[in-house]
Image (cartoon, rainbow, N blue to C red):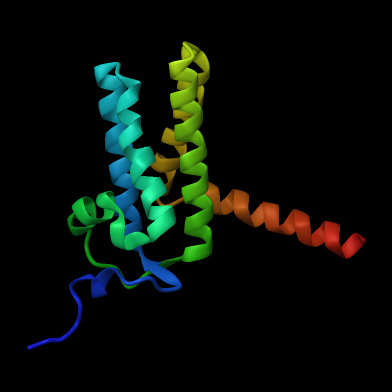
Length: 149
């Protein structure tokens, strides 16, 4: 009988298996689709809460990972936790802007922010990480700036 804790497969490590990352992305995308199809952008509060909890407590508590990661084949490929935290921050930013704009009645701004999030998530599910691309260029900018000082 194994003495490993139940959450061992979701333990915090430096890298996160790709199927878990895809599970989170799928959860966000399904939430976006549900909110747009129903015309109820407040549904986006769910992925915002999931992302905030995940950012605070780790992948152990990400509802989307728990629900949707099993739909993807287990992967030995991983994503860097540093990149995932940056992407998580972007998702939180886009969701927050969307919900605030929606609450203030600015549907144009809400749908633009939501569109940006949707494009980023769809590209990520297809294999291109827009957030990773942005993060790389951000780091390059700071390195060049530091080197020229």
